[in-house]
Structures are given as C-alpha cells and as structure tokens.
Length: 119
Image 1: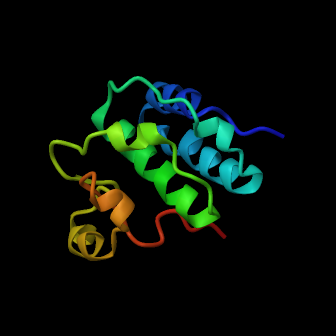
Image 2: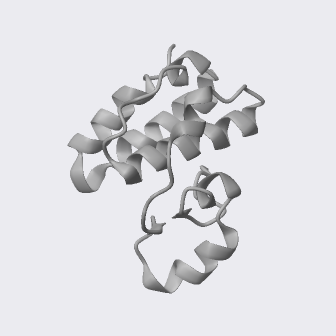
Image 3: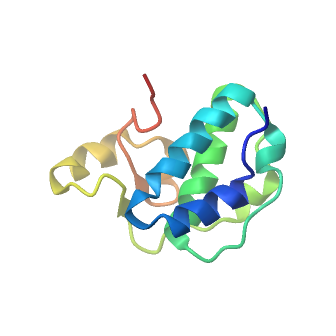
C-alpha cells in the first residue's frame, strides 16, 4: 500500500478547515507504516506558511526517525513569519518552546515533544 503524496495531504489539510489534523495524522501514520519515500519526493506549492512549514518539518522529522534521506526541497521551505503554537493553548506555550523538536523549532513551529507520538 502506498502513502498519499505530501502535496495531496496539504490539499486535504487546506480543504478540511478546523479538521486539518485528520489528513495530517493519517499521513504521519501511513508514512511510518509504509516508509514510502516517493510520497515526499516532490515539493508542494508554497502558499500557506503554517502548513508549508509544518509539512516540511514533519517530513524532516520522519526521515530522521526512519533513517530515510530527507528530500532537498525541505530546505527551501521558510519558517513561519510569526511563531505558531500548534496546540493553541496559552498555558502550553512555555513547555512547547522548551520541548519542540529542532525540526519544528527552526521553522518557528512549537509543539510538545510527543506531538507525533501515537498509541
């Protein structure tokens, strides 16, 4: 079984509004299961700084985790202009700054260290 292409995941995230996390997490789970590096080979259009940065950071994180070569396009995705605290909870900002993995932090995305941990 193949994993969805990352540009298709971004399209689904954009079209799902507040439920953008559903296609995002499905992609993370599928990528971990399939280790399908073809799904992240080609870049997507840069037109949503938060999702662009999140997906590039995620691709970089997962490649590191799974020992897969990170595609070159990832390095061309700029950071968010303003920091994005993905949880949206004010009381988690400080811990997110402290715990956020470098893959996310370098693009001004702040998450808890268990952000991509699944049960």
